Amino acid sequence: MAFNLVLVHPQIPNNTGAIGRLCVNAGASLHLIKPIGFDIDEKAVRRAGLDYWDKLDLHVWESLDAFFAENEISDNAHFATTKTDRPYFQSSFKENDYIFFGSETAGIPQEVLSKYKEQTITIPMTKEGRSLNLAISTGIVLYDAIRQTFDTFERG
Image (cartoon, rainbow, N blue to C red):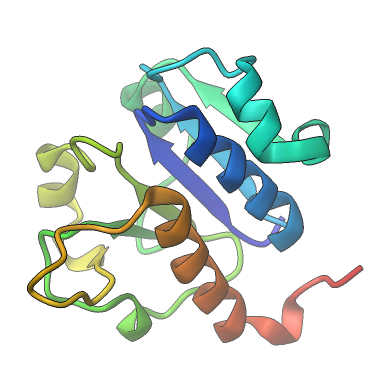
């Protein structure tokens, strides 16, 4: 798999389903960090993911601590937030990097953002906007990461 999308405490099943579909098409793994605001077997997740859900490289973690205990996170991670000025396109993505996104309501926990402050990224928006839909945000950043590493992208 080329990249790892990490959703910290996702709340909306349709977003997670769409992100699962995105991951299958982009060759990315999807990591879901509990607590999750829905049952991942919900119809809405499957409907949004269409027939892709069974092809998804899905990892579900009991907590952020469990995730960090099993995955070495250093300069191989990017943390999407509205609480930084650094645009995602100024980040250098490498194959197998982790790209973190927080929940639709709370974002990535502040203690994580503080620990990895130099690796935070944002999607530029006008002053009228507060945030973008989670599924749209993951697509924007993931496909820029693919653009940057396109020579190694596995196409079917």
